[in-house]
Length: 301
Length: 221
Image (tube, rainbow over all chains, first blue to last red; front, side, top):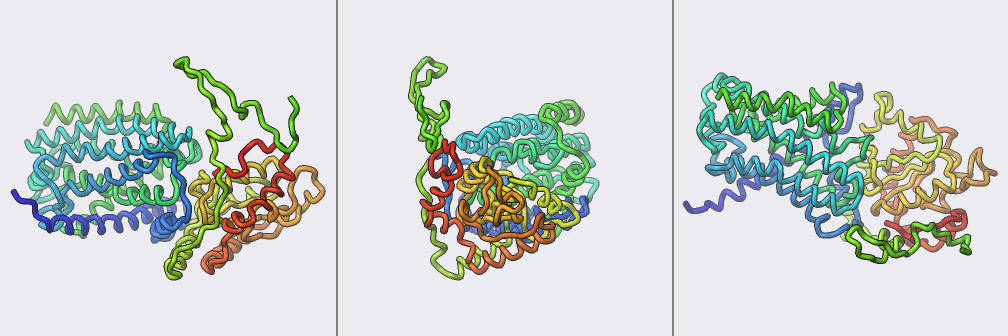
C-alpha cells in the first residue's frame, strides 16, 4: 500500500488542535482545582504566556547531551502516542498514522517519555531529579501493570490489536462501550489512569513541597518549554487512547472535546479530594486494588 | 595552615586526590569541577522590536517567583497564595528552583550569611531576571540599620528593579508592587541582569566586602 502524503499535513493539523486544546484544558483544570480551594486561579491563557516566556529567555545552560535529549524524548513520546492513534473515528483526516497493530505501539509510547526523562534528569545531576525519576519509574511501572492487563483484556475481547477496530466494535449506542461490556477492565484501567496524570494522590514524582520539583529541577528556558508543550499534549493523547478503548471513541470534534474533558475531570476530582501518597503507599495501592481487577478482567473476558 | 581572610576555602573545596570505589585514584578540584565561573555577559533582546515587545508582554504575564524567603517579610508572601489574595490571578506563580524562576524577592532583612545564598540563587537564574526588594530593610537597613551582620542597601549587591516600602508591607502592597514591576517589564526597563553583567566587578567587590568566607567562584551559574 502506497503511503498517502496528505496524511502528514492532516496529522499536523490534529497536533495543532490538540496542543491548543491541551493548553486551555490544563489551565481550565487548574482553575477548577483552584475553585475547590475558593480561589480563582490562573487566567485561562496563562499556559501560553508561560510557554512564550520560556521560549523567550535569553540565556540557557546545558549539562550535556542527554540533558538536551531528555525533553525531546519526552515530547516525542507525547506526539508519537497522539499520532499513532486514531483521534477521530471514521474520519479520513484525523485517523492519523494508525495501523493494524497500533495498540502495542501506544502501550510503548506511554512509557517512552518517562524513560527519556530519566536519562535527561539523570544527566542534570541534581539529587531531587534523581529521586523524582526513580519514584516516577517505580510508580509508572506499578500503574502500567493494571493498564496493560486491561488492554490485553480488551484486545482478547475484541480479538484485535487495532484501535480503529476496537472503536468500530463499540459503535451503535452507549451500551456497546467497553465500559459496559467489560467493566472490570475499565475499572482497572481508570485506576491506572489516576496514577499517570501527575495529580494527587499520585503526584509523588513532582511532589511539590517535598522534592521540589523532581525531575525538571534543572530544566529551564526552551528545555522546560518543550516539556510544557508535552504537558499539554501527553494527557490528551493518553486520554484519547482511553476514550478509544473504553468509551466508544469520538466521531466528531465536539464529542472528542467533551469526552476528553470528562475523562480528565475524573483525575481532577480525585486529586482535589485526596492528599499525596508516599511512594510505597502508591505502589502498594496499585498492586492491591488495581492489579487484581485487571487479572479478573482477563480471566472473565 | 594560614588562611587569607578574603579567600577562605573550606577543606572539602580544596583540590585533592580521591580514591574511587574501583580503586583508581583521581584528582578533583571542586571549585573548577562543580561550578562554572564564566562571567555573565550582556544579552540583547530579539532583533525585531515587535518580537521583543511580545516577549516582554509574556514575561510580564508570567512572573515566576523563586520560593526563597530571606527575612520576616517572607511571611507576607504566603497570604498571596491563599484564597484571600490569590496572586495566581495575575500570572504570579512560585517555583521551587532558581533555574525556572525569573523573579527573586528579597523579603526583608538580609544577613550577610543569607546574602551569599541569595547571590548564588540569583546567578543561577536565567536572563532576563528581576529583583524586588521588599520592606524597608532592603532599602536602608530599616530597624537593622546598625546591625553588625545585615546589609543595608540591597542595590549595592544585587541589581534591584523595584522596592516595596513598609515594615512590613501588606500583601496588597506586594500585589501593587508586582503590577508596577509588570509595567517596567512591558516598557523594557527591567534589565537588571544586564546591569549586573555590565557592572560585574563593582557588584563583586561590594559582595566580597561583606562576605568574608567567600568559598565559591566569582560567578556560579
